[in-house]
Length: 356
Image (tube, rainbow, N blue to C red):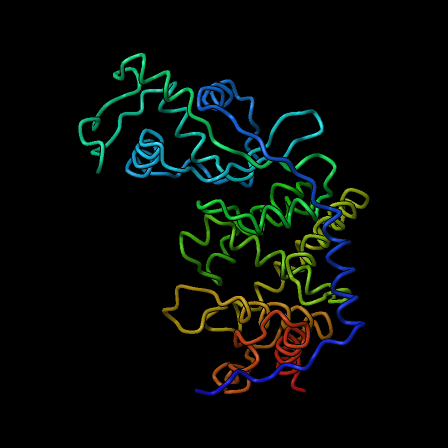
C-alpha cells in the first residue's frame, strides 16, 4: 500500500498566521443555546411572533413528511436544533427550522391530519384534538433546543453561520441568505433580472435550483466578477456578500445606477442569445447551466462588448471553440473558484470574441 505523500512542515509564520485568523474570525460569532416547549413554539408561530425572512422557502413539506416529523415528536426522537437570529428589537428571525415550526403550528393549532404512520399505526388519520388531554399536555411539554445568534454579530458572521450550521434539514443556501440578509435596491435588481424570460431561456436550471435562487446567484456573479476581482481571495461567498452590501449602498446613493446595470445585463444576454446557439448550455437539449461555463461566457461577453461594442452588430461570430479542449479545460470544475482559474476562463472568451 502506498503511503500518503509527506506534506512539508508548516513554518512558524504559517502557524502563527492561521492562529491569528482563527482568533480574529471567532470574535464575530456570538450565540447562545436555548430550549423552547412545543406549546410555546406553536403559540409563537400561531401569533406571528417569529419572523420568517424573505429568503426562507415557501412551505413546501408534503403531507407525508409533515406526518413523519410529528410521529418523531410523539415518539420522543431527537429533533434537530432550530436556528434563530435575535433581531435588535428582540424578535427572533427563523434562519433554519421554519418547516418544522410551521408543521408544529399546523398540527397543534390547525387541522392537520396525520397520514398513515409507519410506527404509530393506530394514530394514523388523527388530528391533534383527537388525542386525549393528557397526551396533548405531554406534547406541549416536549421541548426543542435552539441556537440563537445575537444582535452583536456582524452581517458576515451571520452569513457564515447561516451557511455552515447543519441542523439535519436543508439549510438556506448562500443565494437565499444574501436575498434576506442584504435586502436593498441592488438586490432588488438581481431578483428582477433573475426572472427575465431571456435568462430563463439561456440558462435553464432544475426546478429545485430555481426554487433555491440559483439564477439570482448567477446574476450576482455576473455583476460582481464582471466589475472586477480585486479583493477576491478564492472565497466566493464572502466576496459576493461584500459586493452586494456595497452595491446596495451605491444604488441608494445613485439611483441611476440601476438603469445602467440593467442595460449591461440585457445587452450581454441579447449578445449571447444572438451568437451562442445553446446559450449557456453545453448542448441543444441541455437542461442545466454549469456555473463555470456561465461565468466564462457571460462575463467574457460583457468585457468584449465593453471593449468593442461594434461586435454586437456583426452578422455572425465564430464560436466553434466552445467544443475545443482548451475551453472545456478552462471551464472545468477543478479549482473552479480559484481567482486564477476564474480570470482564465473569463479572459479566454473575451479574447476569442475579439479575435485575439
